[in-house]
Length: 72
Image 1 (spheres, rainbow, N blue to C red):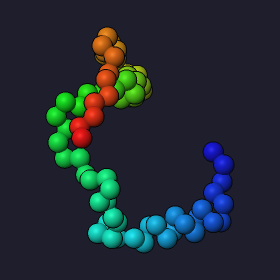
Image 2 (cartoon, rainbow, N blue to C red):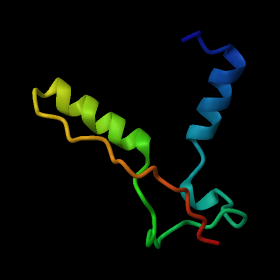
Image 3 (tube, rainbow, N blue to C red):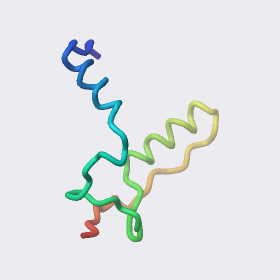
Image 4 (tube, rainbow, N blue to C red):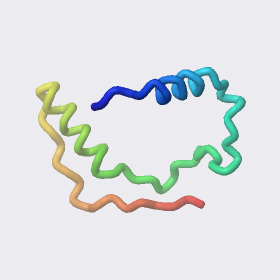
């Protein structure tokens, strides 16, 4: 991974000072209802990797491909 530029560092420092209350989320409301969501293949891959590093037997991959679901 490459080093951040000075401009990127300054921008990150500025963003870190913003309070959560001051961030405008009106165009992307918070999702609080996760009904119908399915775990995707990435989370399964990460879980198998964690199991391997801990010496646990991995669970087999989900045979049904995950489907993205839109709530809105």
